[in-house]
Length: 114
Image (tube, rainbow, N blue to C red; front, top):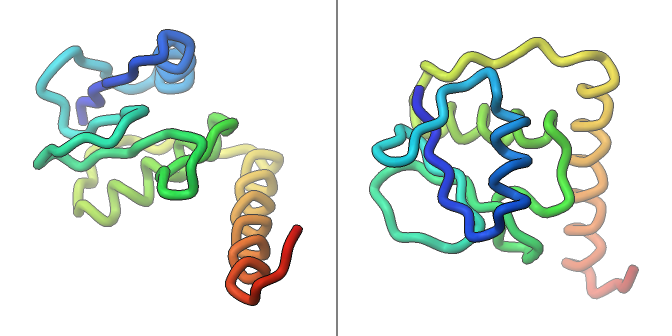
């Protein structure tokens, strides 16, 4: 699978290149787009940002990025992106992040403040 990076932030773009060094990065025509702004496209996309609507909220770890790409891949029925084996630490970190997001979501739904 080819991943296209459409990021205005040069820092984010370079970080993504490092995080995704084991995957094929293309300038145009990717099977999947990773971006930092809302875009209209027919290609599945993963938006990274600081707002709650982003698919991946900054700051993030490599394991969180790979987990989101895997989820997007499953939703899109695209099975070509190889997923690396995660270390125990990465798995625990990803699980903790999901847990914290769920707790924050529940608290906000019930009108609580953090």
